[in-house]
Image 1 (spheres, rainbow, N blue to C red):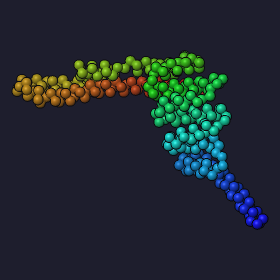
Image 2: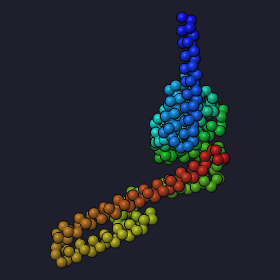
Image 3: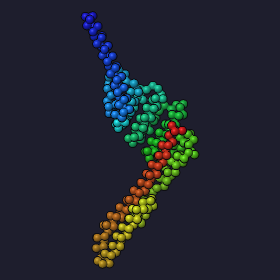
Image 4: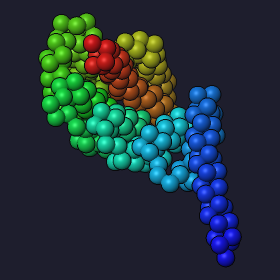
Length: 280
């Protein structure tokens, strides 16, 4: 009986020893695969380590989240960023995990959830983290296209960071002001009244002149039909073509304006990224 008990103890001890080695090896392999860019293999190895580990550390959950993020499975990455931040006791690391989770939400255009996530950041008596939180929140509102809220938060951030005279900050305001002045509906109605004028207003000379030329030519054809045949024949033959090109022209005019607005917003966003707190 004593021999059997001793054998059982030895076998259980051996199992846990092998198990611990297996977990350690799996974690090492997972990191190697991550560094090699083999994110699917890295995910599988981290999942194996977590399955066999007695207690999973926040760092392991974080590394698994990073592997999922690199793999392109952002939803799964968010789940494990959340696990890591929940278990982490070190405030600095916890904040890092939360910012990573915020970025993950931004990458899938879930801007509201990104803003909510930032509420978990512990910035008490930490001006540096508070500024980073402001910056991330301003980014979320900008991508959400809530430009008034963005400007309010971003101006406060820029003032605290003393960025008001920086070139990038001035360009942000410059491009956003230009975007605010773009009027898509004005461009459309200009092309309704004078075909092509709305496109030309926002720099699309090719489509604008093309629209002018086509509609002018169709008007000439219409009057030619009226003179040679009748008003009815001119109406039946030419008007459908005129309507088609006229409508296409003013739709293009509106889209041209929207594209110009998007161009200005994109240029502003590039300048915003240059003002990240880590760069100052």
